[in-house]
Image (tube, rainbow, N blue to C red; front, side):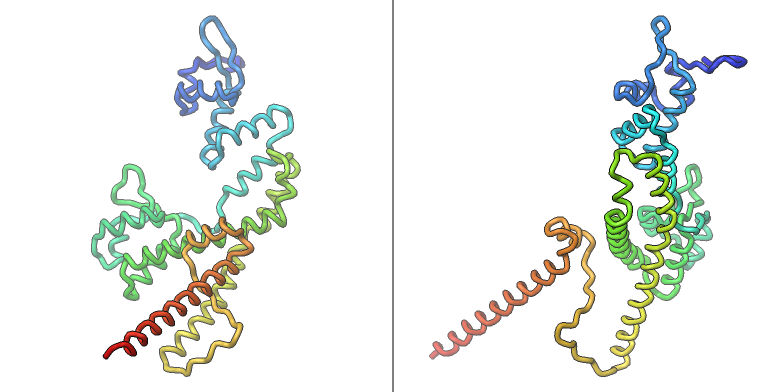
Length: 315
């Protein structure tokens, strides 16, 4: 029930569940975990107020952002202890805010089919939805949300150039794994050298969190700028090499000690990192490759020797 006039609003647990969107069972579970203030006991019923409704909405927002109930409890305990959460919530908002200026768009199924040659391909649509290139609009089977119009535009251009849709999807999956590895390394790098001093407390102090949020805002574009510059450099290098190859240009010998990049699946790289540490991945892969080459060379020599022996022994 709610109050009238200036009287504070009051809720029974069923009313609180309806107003917050949580279930009665969830509210009781939050109470057991200490996530909600103790309600007022009135007779045989518990009475909840606006503070409980605000707390439930706050918990729901943090859950949507990927936080666990344990970490949410730490944040709320800091708030209740008077430490303040303005900076922490500002940091949360900064990290979870958009990391691109690109705005999502919508597209109809008819327009989507037209962009890809006018042929209906339900399998390709399902693949695009699974990859997140398209998102279904609830209640609308003929319309999709496009989180990144640029990404969809790339797929359209590749398809128009003759690349089959399954190949485009496969390329995107591979590329995504490699980009996620780059993002992970950038976050590890900046956490170690920039953000570690702000994350010594759990949760961080209000002032530290506010300063960290400012740094996130400043450093946010750096990862993309670095990747853009390095991608442009690599594309020029490899495009030139491919052009020389296909035009029949003379091959240059590989200088002794020179290195060339080799792409590995993200899962393989992650497994090696967990085994030997992030700073020794390259050395481990090099050593493993050299050992495999030596083993195969020995196998070849053994097989050749055995074959020659058989020849000498034959009548």
